[in-house]
Image 1: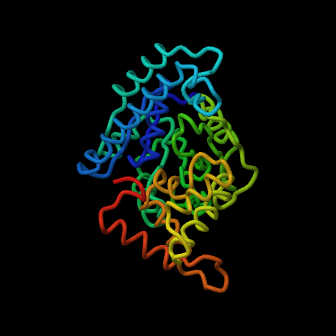
Image 2 (image 1 turned 45 degrees about the horizontal axis):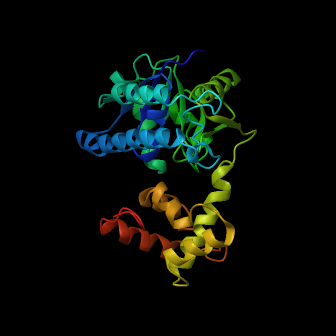
Length: 308
């Protein structure tokens, strides 16, 4: 199957990035949003990605930008990089992305729908039930869930044979990986189509051979972030000191709380809340304390630990 028309359901940080990257690579892209209010929250995210691409391309056009740390593989190949062409592709992407509030209109003739909703079982289930009656029979459906297994939702989608996971990392123009994970009902031809699509939007397809909560990346990343938040929630240390410890001690470019700011407080809280009911003797982290502190920050209108 040749994928041409792509619909991203959800205009959050990563949903917007996925949509923009697909448009940058020449796909016909629509973002579906739940409400008029969502448009006001999504459009600034689109502008932010647009500016991030300009900044990245201009940096890549310098000697400093041609280093492994700064060159964005999601935007161009090192040997054939042309700044002018990349900037043109960026403008085309910026001008071509469509936003639609009517779900049936959005997915009509879609070849691929990428669900990028909040990391919440109820929200995803409600979306799939709403989508099932209007989803075309040809359309492949993927979830960008970072921790939830596709098998949990396969039945409710109404198209388990065409349903699987396609998980991206934040700042995908730089961290250009895509984890592809099937569930037991996924037909191989659709899995292969998604692998091809990932490569076509300049991602490195990372194929999983079986289902795993957290996939590859988050199976390593989430415990790392939990450990940092546990140090904070139990008053062992403050976020800035914890970040400094990690960056200075390992040479990593970012500390855990800087990463959390990229992920978003709400997404982080949703993940933590999935573990709150785990008996304390089974969990090495103080999830209830972490959840309370994150919720307090959100209630106070804070966007992150460093973001105002």
